[in-house]
Length: 220
Ligand SMILES: Cc1cc2nc3c(=O)[nH]c(=O)nc-3n(C[C@H](O)[C@H](O)[C@H](O)COP(=O)(O)O)c2cc1C
Image 1 (cartoon, rainbow, N blue to C red):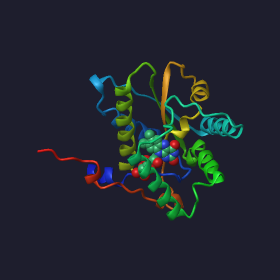
Image 2: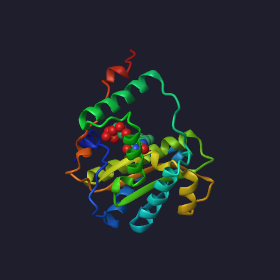
Image 3: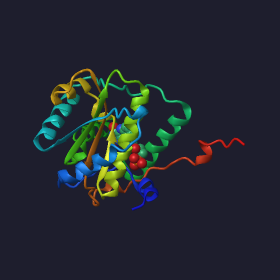
Image 4: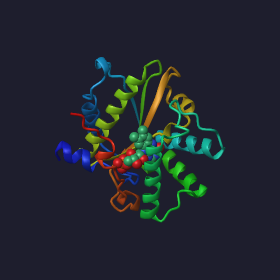
């Protein structure tokens, strides 16, 4: 698969086969992702990969916190208000997902199920957490975003699916305590990773993109 095809065909995968990915393959994906650019080559990324019983234990803890009604407290807060253009694109995502699946995303029970599916890492065999030192500025957050994309593209090139998950960071303090990560670290993103389940209906959905004329201005 060439680079252009890899970027254009990657999509979020939310249904996985239980079969784990070999450690050598996960290593290769990470060894590729570290070639992402970063501000002054500072490489502000730290990675945890959870599998097996430990992943199940963490999921149980997250579902438990959610079901108790614990308010989410991610290190990077969810935006309260979105600007108009972004807000319209989010509405379009919910509308097209609802059309494709027949599921009403305004229903609180549907939202609850979706949250729990996130905390279960969509039953992927592995969960990745990305951290960096909390003293770093938004430039380093930007760098970690590049790292995350490289990781997801490297996985996709090997037929392995991923989904980036802000929701998986909802209980950041508890997650850090569970993983023995100091509070001085910023938990940025969770990523579920594993082989896509081709029979999972959720994987048939494809998101749209706005036309580039909406985002690009040519100045000559
Ligand atoms: C920073 C970030 C956070 C995200 N958080 C979640 C999440 O918590 N749960 C989820 O199912 N998808 C999450 N997504 C996936 C987006 O919904 C998805 O990337 C977007 O709808 C575009 O679809 P695509 O990835 O299939 O191209 C997140 C994506 C990004 C980049």
